[in-house]
Every structure is written in C-alpha cells, then in structure tokens.
Length: 314
Image 1: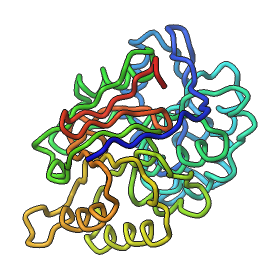
Image 2: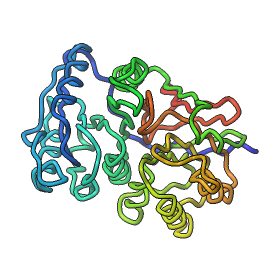
Image 3: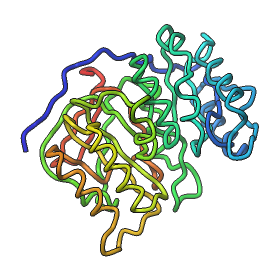
C-alpha cells in the first residue's frame, strides 16, 4: 500500500514541563476517586512538579463532578492562570462534551498548556484542536483491568510526553485484539481522535477536519451495534474521507470470540477507506496504556508496528 502524507499545519505545542512548574487537577467530567487522584499527585510531586486542585475538583452532582458552570469555571480558571503550566483531568466518564464548546479559546491561544486525559476528555482535545490548534496529551495515570497500580511503562510514557522533547514511539502489541486489523503501508499526518464515542459525539461541532490526518480510535464498554452505528455515521457523513491512515488502540470490555465481533465490524468500515491501518496500540482503557500527543504530526508504519511522534520534525 502506498504511503499517504499530510502537509504540515500550524500547531500550538506547549513547551515541556520542568521541575518547579505547577500543574492543576480539574474534573470536567465525572467525579473521581479522591484517593487515586491524591496518589497521582504524589507521582507528579516526585517528578519535581508543584500540584494544586481546582475549586470543584472533588465535587459531585449526580454522575457529574459538579454543575456545568462549576466544571467549566475550574477548567477556564486553569487555562487563564499563567502559573499553571499543565492541566490534568482527574478522570473521564461523562460530561466533558457538555462544556467543550465554552472553553476560553483566547486564553488557550495566548498561553498554550497541555490538557492531559483521554476517554470522555477526547471532547476537550478535539475542541481545543479545532478552535485554536492546540495539541493535547492522550493519556493519564491509568490502571488497566488486570493491574493494581499504575505501571512503570504508563508512568514513563506520560513523563516522556509531558516533560521532554524526545520522540514518542508507540509499539503495537500482538496480544491486543485490535492487532488483527493491521494492514500494510505507511502514513504521515496529524494524529487526531481518541475515544470513538467522543469522536462521533463531536462530529459537526467539535471534530476537526480529518483530511490528511491519522485517525486514532479506542473504546470501552460499547455494544457492537453502537460501534457499528458510530462508524456508519462518521463514514456516511464524510468525516472519514481523505484520511491518511488509522491507528486503533485498545477496545476494552468487548467479546472478541464472538462469531461476528467488534473486530469484524471495524474491519468492514475501515477496509472501505483504502488507507494503512495499525491496530494493537496500547492507547485506551487496557493494561499499561501509553501517552501520545494529539494534533502533532505522526508517522504510522503498519509493517514495523509503530506509531511515532518525531518531535524534531513535527
């Protein structure tokens, strides 16, 4: 399969953090487990970072971490505070999509800082990328379904993305069921996407133009019919036209041994695109997930099984 490329586009990539920088935890989606957040804060302090928390970081409003106004106020306060150099979301869940169009994009353009998170936080990443061309970090101190604590790989991957300018190279894992979707070929383009549910939810208002992009997809706990419906909508609405390639992360809590599994559904939709596909990437809700920059120019090599952000060439 031939190589596909995307022309370089202007992108706001926040500078890497240094010891002494301040980071803030906010909760734009569902309420977090406070003990887990505090443990993650200690990891960051161990990296030499100062840590504080949004006013409503541990609030609860049913399935949301506070009202829309409270969650939005914390997020915008962090975007506007010049002393805050990165924003950690405490968890995903549900609710970021309710406020993603009301971020202070002017503040983000004037003082770019990484927003770190994934899953429901995909809505924030997409909105920031669409409205002010700001890169984000798809990742977190995530604990996989077969893990009791954050793995060293997950810690190191997040630290590399957040605090260095080193290349970020993610290797496909054969044990991940989505590795069966890998085809052949190479692609180059901005890496855009994240959680499939949020990519579909953002279509028409927060989803950036995907022409020439490498689309990243991961998912958790959806019915096969939901995956089929979301992929159908994205494809028939033209959002997948002109992709350079597709990177498939972890699809968690699916029954892969079914006669007609989510892998078959994804293959049906993706095969029509005629672009290189790399599956099996440790990005999502599975064990030992990695962190990677969203919006930055990525290189996908299906044969080598790698998805790379070459910092010096982005």
